[in-house]
Length: 225
Image (cartoon, rainbow, N blue to C red; front, side, top):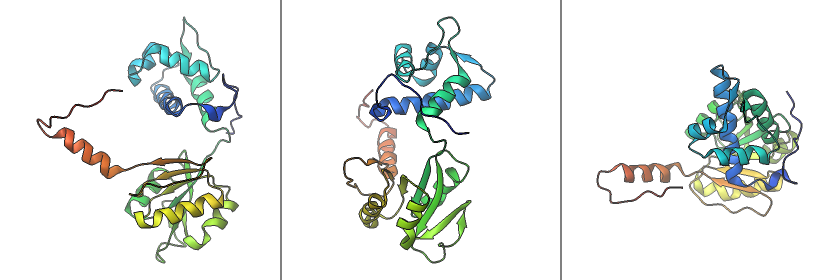
């Protein structure tokens, strides 16, 4: 199904704050869960309770994207889900490249493979035993083909799961090839030019933080957002 871009309460959809986009993704997932449970309507206070938000925040977010509910009946679950999907995925499909098919890369292919959303449509590695093969439904290409495949398949988003020493060179090639969104799992902070959105995911640091707070009498105080 192809979704058309939706009219929102702002002049430029890309101007949506990052925190709002994150909440919209949570709303969409929740709508899918409620639909699977047979729910057809939901009120803002119910959504807020399930997502640990406030009802006014939920209503503001949904109004911002140009969708409305009924004070008496709440929101139509399917209509709200479709509205958010149309906003987040206006082309109907987000095509993603994965660079680095080690253990983490294989796990990501299993989760975001050819039936995922977003969908990994091409993988890249330098190991000869991997290139030219299909891993979890996704073809793995040699790194020498990176620019060609990304441009041919109109890929704008990439995941970096390489060793840290290789990540900087990889992101430079990705940006030159036309990628404008990067999710970095490599253990190194990267720099990108204006107009490219970069997210860092440091699993090791997160786990170390959790271990710290898990220790009895750690003496630390968690911040509340």
